[in-house]
Image (cartoon, rainbow, N blue to C red):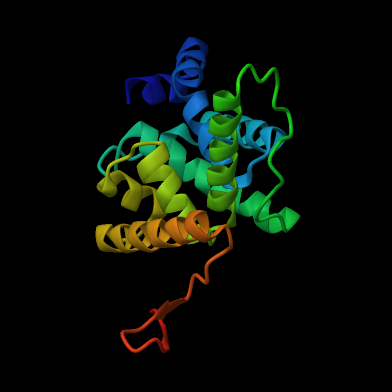
Length: 189
Protein backbone atom coordinates (compact mmCIF):
# COMPACT_ATOMS: atom_id res chain seq x y z
CA UNK A 1 0.00 0.00 0.00
CA UNK A 2 2.85 2.36 0.85
CA UNK A 3 4.48 1.66 -2.50
CA UNK A 4 1.33 2.60 -4.40
CA UNK A 5 1.01 5.84 -2.46
CA UNK A 6 4.63 6.64 -3.31
CA UNK A 7 4.02 5.73 -6.98
CA UNK A 8 1.13 8.22 -7.02
CA UNK A 9 3.54 10.80 -5.56
CA UNK A 10 5.98 10.08 -8.39
CA UNK A 11 8.65 8.10 -6.53
CA UNK A 12 10.22 6.04 -9.33
CA UNK A 13 12.08 3.69 -6.98
CA UNK A 14 8.76 2.61 -5.44
CA UNK A 15 7.49 1.54 -8.84
CA UNK A 16 10.71 -0.42 -9.41
CA UNK A 17 10.29 -2.09 -6.01
CA UNK A 18 6.63 -3.02 -6.65
CA UNK A 19 7.56 -4.42 -10.05
CA UNK A 20 10.42 -6.43 -8.54
CA UNK A 21 8.14 -7.89 -5.87
CA UNK A 22 5.06 -8.66 -7.98
CA UNK A 23 5.91 -9.01 -11.68
CA UNK A 24 6.35 -12.80 -11.37
CA UNK A 25 2.85 -13.15 -9.88
CA UNK A 26 1.31 -11.27 -12.81
CA UNK A 27 3.41 -13.17 -15.36
CA UNK A 28 2.49 -16.59 -13.91
CA UNK A 29 -1.21 -15.72 -13.91
CA UNK A 30 -1.14 -14.58 -17.55
CA UNK A 31 0.91 -17.60 -18.60
CA UNK A 32 -1.46 -19.98 -16.83
CA UNK A 33 -4.41 -18.37 -18.63
CA UNK A 34 -2.93 -18.37 -22.15
CA UNK A 35 0.06 -20.77 -22.17
CA UNK A 36 2.21 -18.32 -24.09
CA UNK A 37 5.36 -16.68 -22.79
CA UNK A 38 5.13 -13.70 -25.12
CA UNK A 39 1.48 -13.22 -24.17
CA UNK A 40 2.38 -13.30 -20.47
CA UNK A 41 5.21 -10.82 -20.99
CA UNK A 42 2.91 -8.44 -22.84
CA UNK A 43 0.23 -8.69 -20.15
CA UNK A 44 2.80 -8.09 -17.41
CA UNK A 45 4.11 -5.02 -19.19
CA UNK A 46 0.62 -3.64 -19.75
CA UNK A 47 -0.42 -4.26 -16.14
CA UNK A 48 2.54 -2.35 -14.77
CA UNK A 49 2.04 0.50 -17.23
CA UNK A 50 -1.53 0.65 -15.95
CA UNK A 51 -0.16 0.75 -12.39
CA UNK A 52 1.78 3.90 -13.28
CA UNK A 53 -1.37 5.50 -14.65
CA UNK A 54 -3.92 4.20 -12.15
CA UNK A 55 -2.17 3.65 -8.81
CA UNK A 56 -4.44 6.27 -7.26
CA UNK A 57 -7.47 4.04 -7.96
CA UNK A 58 -6.31 1.35 -5.53
CA UNK A 59 -8.73 0.96 -2.62
CA UNK A 60 -7.26 -0.90 0.35
CA UNK A 61 -10.78 -1.58 1.69
CA UNK A 62 -11.48 -3.80 -1.34
CA UNK A 63 -8.40 -6.01 -0.93
CA UNK A 64 -4.65 -6.31 -1.01
CA UNK A 65 -2.27 -4.80 -3.55
CA UNK A 66 -1.55 -8.32 -4.80
CA UNK A 67 -5.25 -9.02 -5.36
CA UNK A 68 -5.60 -5.64 -7.12
CA UNK A 69 -2.73 -6.53 -9.44
CA UNK A 70 -4.36 -9.89 -10.22
CA UNK A 71 -7.59 -8.04 -10.99
CA UNK A 72 -5.71 -5.77 -13.38
CA UNK A 73 -4.00 -8.81 -14.93
CA UNK A 74 -7.34 -10.56 -15.29
CA UNK A 75 -8.88 -7.64 -17.17
CA UNK A 76 -5.88 -7.21 -19.47
CA UNK A 77 -5.72 -10.97 -20.10
CA UNK A 78 -9.41 -11.31 -20.90
CA UNK A 79 -9.33 -8.24 -23.15
CA UNK A 80 -6.33 -9.60 -25.05
CA UNK A 81 -7.83 -13.09 -25.33
CA UNK A 82 -11.06 -11.67 -26.69
CA UNK A 83 -9.19 -9.40 -29.06
CA UNK A 84 -6.96 -12.17 -30.35
CA UNK A 85 -9.74 -14.80 -30.17
CA UNK A 86 -7.26 -17.01 -28.43
CA UNK A 87 -8.70 -18.92 -25.50
CA UNK A 88 -5.99 -21.56 -25.53
CA UNK A 89 -2.52 -21.80 -26.98
CA UNK A 90 -0.27 -24.72 -27.73
CA UNK A 91 2.16 -25.52 -25.00
CA UNK A 92 5.73 -24.50 -25.74
CA UNK A 93 7.71 -27.42 -27.12
CA UNK A 94 10.96 -26.46 -25.53
CA UNK A 95 11.64 -29.49 -23.38
CA UNK A 96 15.37 -29.42 -22.87
CA UNK A 97 17.93 -31.98 -21.75
CA UNK A 98 15.82 -34.76 -20.30
CA UNK A 99 18.20 -36.64 -18.07
CA UNK A 100 16.05 -39.59 -17.12
CA UNK A 101 12.84 -41.45 -17.86
CA UNK A 102 11.44 -40.27 -14.54
CA UNK A 103 12.08 -36.63 -15.46
CA UNK A 104 10.43 -37.16 -18.83
CA UNK A 105 7.33 -38.68 -17.22
CA UNK A 106 7.11 -35.85 -14.69
CA UNK A 107 7.40 -33.26 -17.47
CA UNK A 108 4.72 -35.04 -19.48
CA UNK A 109 2.36 -35.04 -16.48
CA UNK A 110 2.95 -31.32 -15.97
CA UNK A 111 2.33 -30.62 -19.67
CA UNK A 112 -0.85 -32.66 -19.58
CA UNK A 113 -2.05 -30.75 -16.50
CA UNK A 114 -1.27 -27.38 -18.12
CA UNK A 115 -3.02 -28.43 -21.33
CA UNK A 116 -6.10 -29.51 -19.35
CA UNK A 117 -6.15 -26.21 -17.43
CA UNK A 118 -5.93 -24.31 -20.72
CA UNK A 119 -9.00 -26.19 -22.03
CA UNK A 120 -11.17 -25.29 -19.02
CA UNK A 121 -13.84 -22.65 -19.56
CA UNK A 122 -12.34 -19.29 -18.63
CA UNK A 123 -14.45 -18.76 -15.47
CA UNK A 124 -13.21 -22.04 -13.97
CA UNK A 125 -9.67 -21.57 -15.26
CA UNK A 126 -9.23 -18.14 -13.69
CA UNK A 127 -10.67 -19.30 -10.34
CA UNK A 128 -8.30 -22.29 -10.28
CA UNK A 129 -5.29 -20.24 -11.33
CA UNK A 130 -5.92 -17.57 -8.68
CA UNK A 131 -6.89 -19.82 -5.77
CA UNK A 132 -4.72 -22.86 -6.43
CA UNK A 133 -1.69 -21.73 -8.43
CA UNK A 134 -1.39 -18.17 -7.10
CA UNK A 135 -2.62 -19.23 -3.64
CA UNK A 136 -5.02 -16.35 -3.12
CA UNK A 137 -7.65 -16.81 -0.42
CA UNK A 138 -11.24 -17.33 -1.50
CA UNK A 139 -12.00 -13.75 -0.42
CA UNK A 140 -9.10 -12.37 -2.46
CA UNK A 141 -10.12 -14.48 -5.45
CA UNK A 142 -13.69 -13.19 -5.12
CA UNK A 143 -12.40 -9.61 -5.04
CA UNK A 144 -10.33 -10.17 -8.18
CA UNK A 145 -13.21 -11.83 -10.01
CA UNK A 146 -15.76 -9.34 -8.65
CA UNK A 147 -18.12 -12.05 -7.49
CA UNK A 148 -19.30 -13.56 -4.17
CA UNK A 149 -17.12 -16.07 -2.31
CA UNK A 150 -19.81 -18.69 -2.90
CA UNK A 151 -19.39 -18.27 -6.63
CA UNK A 152 -15.64 -18.78 -6.24
CA UNK A 153 -16.26 -21.98 -4.31
CA UNK A 154 -18.69 -23.19 -6.96
CA UNK A 155 -16.31 -22.38 -9.82
CA UNK A 156 -13.44 -24.08 -8.02
CA UNK A 157 -15.52 -27.19 -7.41
CA UNK A 158 -16.73 -27.38 -11.00
CA UNK A 159 -13.26 -26.59 -12.33
CA UNK A 160 -11.70 -29.35 -10.24
CA UNK A 161 -14.35 -31.83 -11.36
CA UNK A 162 -13.75 -30.96 -15.02
CA UNK A 163 -9.99 -31.03 -14.60
CA UNK A 164 -10.12 -34.43 -12.92
CA UNK A 165 -12.36 -35.78 -15.68
CA UNK A 166 -10.02 -34.45 -18.38
CA UNK A 167 -6.97 -35.95 -16.71
CA UNK A 168 -8.68 -39.28 -16.02
CA UNK A 169 -10.12 -39.67 -19.49
CA UNK A 170 -7.61 -37.68 -21.48
CA UNK A 171 -10.54 -35.95 -23.19
CA UNK A 172 -12.24 -32.60 -22.66
CA UNK A 173 -15.22 -32.75 -20.35
CA UNK A 174 -18.48 -30.92 -20.98
CA UNK A 175 -18.44 -27.90 -18.69
CA UNK A 176 -22.21 -27.47 -18.64
CA UNK A 177 -23.51 -30.95 -18.02
CA UNK A 178 -23.51 -33.57 -15.29
CA UNK A 179 -24.84 -37.06 -15.34
CA UNK A 180 -27.75 -37.43 -12.95
CA UNK A 181 -28.51 -40.38 -10.66
CA UNK A 182 -30.35 -42.25 -13.43
CA UNK A 183 -27.68 -41.63 -16.04
CA UNK A 184 -29.61 -38.78 -17.72
CA UNK A 185 -27.72 -35.59 -18.52
CA UNK A 186 -28.70 -32.64 -16.35
CA UNK A 187 -27.71 -29.07 -17.16
CA UNK A 188 -25.92 -27.23 -14.38
CA UNK A 189 -26.85 -23.67 -13.56
